[in-house]
Length: 313
Ligand SMILES: [Zn+2]
Image 1: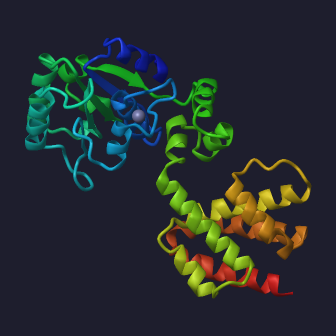
Image 2 (image 1 turned 90 degrees about the horizontal axis):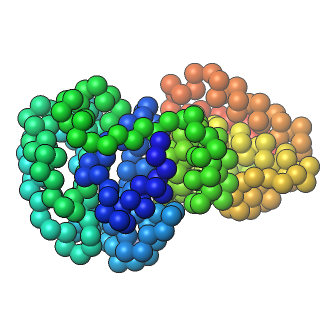
Image 3 (image 1 turned 90 degrees about the vertical axis):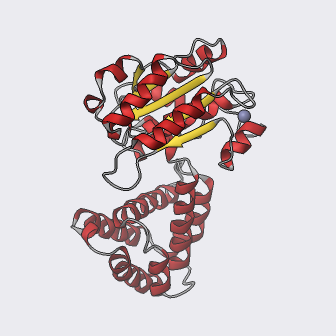
């Protein structure tokens, strides 16, 4: 894979290809990488680590109101990208960029382009306007017409380049190794884990965990607060926290973020080591059983009631 920073360098001396095709298995983080690249291209003062995050362009992107940025995704499950939105995107791409040097369009799941849409897109790629950059991402590249593929520079994201991934993530994340582990090895998926959605979920989980052990609110209310989350996600995060609690007890450095560490300090005295192991084992058992097929709330309610009992004594 061409390092992301090399791509950015080429953008600054205007040798960036007009169309990039990001490929790689599902979940590896094509979307995050595409987003990262688009932001960096549009940023007024990008660095090797990407967009600055606070210039006017970055703020407009954050507010979903950047005049030189468009994103197209297939609508609904199993939907295709149809010709009309592609035509309007192509027209838009021909216009001169409003404020910066680039006009950037993101086309997610480009393998769902129908034939008319692909043909329409091909015209832009044959006669690209100077400062238009089209970023396509696709899992099934075979589903893309060869004519389209041949006009794009392909970038394949893969799991093998672990040291590079860690180095790259280290620019953004405090603990890239852990992020990579949690994301199952996909570097760009690891970066997604740093985004807001992840933070929101983490806050829900942390609040629930704290309230459970500190006896704030009923078991029913706490499990309901997590009802929208994936059962397996809850179980795996909680089991990680049990282990972190035990490690904290041994005064080992715990590689967790400060918010988690704070909650662990608040809750660890509620159980002794043996009980923490018991809770951990229970979580793993639930995780390994077919708990994913049950409602999150139901699984957690039983578990939380038992933990409440343990923390009573
Ligand atoms: Zn910026």
